[in-house]
Length: 266
Image (tube, rainbow, N blue to C red; front, side, top):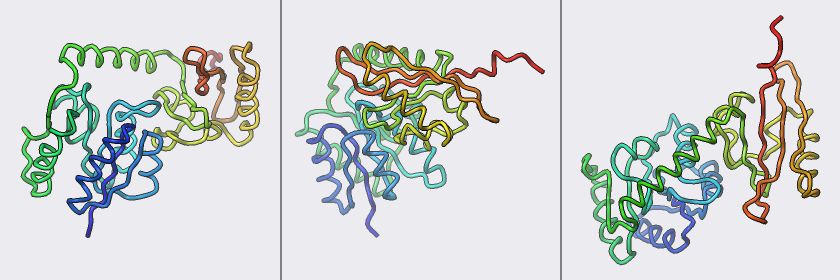
């Protein structure tokens, strides 16, 4: 039976390059050109191996891997992390949840390296020393370390801010969330990532949420819109604002505060 591989990378030429190598080896290959598309493909089609670039806009490779490990906990398949900059050693592979790492380099030098790597993989002769396949380092090690430190710093802020946070893309799909936000609505990351924003709140409050999204989008002078959700299970203050980079609006940010922490105990 043919094995099914999924390749996710926002570099079109690299997707075609890697897909060609895999197809010549007899793999059926699905292609995705960003993390959102990759998660859609994972939900639609079972795969036997996943190749995913670590640096992608909106939903990055780390999120895709986290989603995959949780969504397919009972069907573990090998994951190959691909990057030119953000993996330094075996401990980094384990940290992000991947099994193997392929570093990007000049295309003309990569084909032979990847083929030899896949030969070992297909023959099940890969050893611990083969987990990392490096070609030519695209970035100096110091620059790589600085990039990792910057990404970790930003992620630390996102996870430690004390509010539930949800990043919503311009098509109203959820593209990032923190653990606190998930715990507030009692839902899992794999259930929410790349789902419609209306899945955040109970059915009875969806209209109010959509109205808030429209309100801040249509009135740029309005910094945010807030409302409370109070049910048997939830007492949240929901704050909706636009997500901007410079002058460009790219979606929304939804922050949630658990109001039960301020309630007097009965």
